[in-house]
Length: 251
Image (cartoon, rainbow, N blue to C red; front, side, top):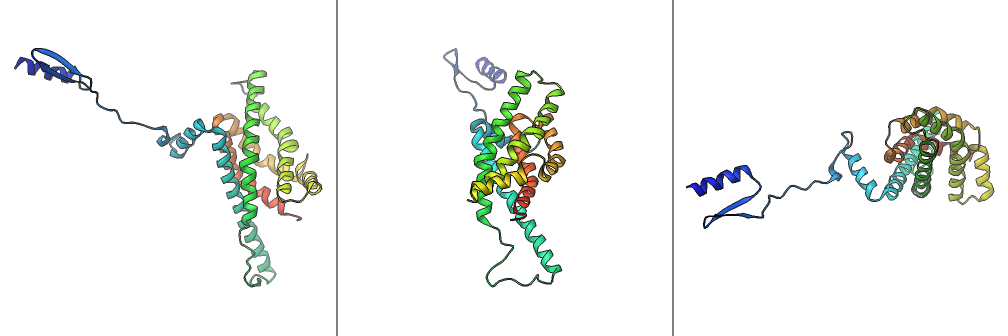
């Protein structure tokens, strides 16, 4: 019939509407086909699904997300450091013919959970908030106040400040001194750790330049600002393992 053909043609033209022909009148029901919901939690960034979820968490709770990931990665870094230390110690004892000699019920290669907890706390409560503030201030001053945003001078200046001022006179002293205080060693012992391993030109700083100059150059040039702390923490798996080993030397 004409009315049915008219209804059919209208439905073909407007597939998301339901049309009803009644008493020679055309009425339209307000009924749309529901669209599937999508969430950015399942999205991926650069083909990596985890980064999509991380980006969503950053929007909802930026500092908390950075603190939690930093705490987890610092704990993992110290576990790696302790594992390496235990392997090196076993190899050394083996060369001395003492590899099989252990106290009954005690294993020297057990993970020190208390030490892991200290590193996790440092990453959560100190590292993440400190670097979040540092990167924000650095962007505002270098890119905003000085006006180097989008120029090649921006990453160069940021890298110079990072390696010549921030690391030797702020971060490394905070790390070595803070970890000593977390071990309840007292202020004098903490200051000694800072002077010996963290302040100014030290062997730790030289090793830092070898590792962090290329890492931070990529951080300033390639990595988006919201992902800088995640990038730094992932690189810190290697670096914190080195710092953890360095802290145990001569103790």
